[in-house]
Length: 128
Image (cartoon, rainbow, N blue to C red; front, side, top):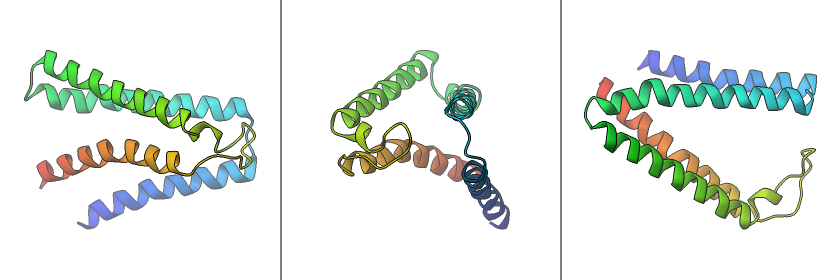
């Protein structure tokens, strides 16, 4: 239990450090884009090497591939719907608050949080 708390605290600390660095250094849009691209690549790598590998231990390749494609489609359609309903108008390119409904932000968090929480829960239940 203490180890899980420690790793969780370390992960949360990384978010705070990143926020402080970004606030203090005010990186350019190019630097922000590079960091976001790197994070995206790491996330895709994590899915490809850990989650899909684990899924292949209990399901066929076709089933895992279909599940990944359905998940990607749901996320893509959800993102498109959120953008159409004001999610893209929440901030302008410079980061200033713009007009827009707060509901897409909530829905975007749910769209992101449910699968992540599901996988974390399954991982924790198998580890225990």
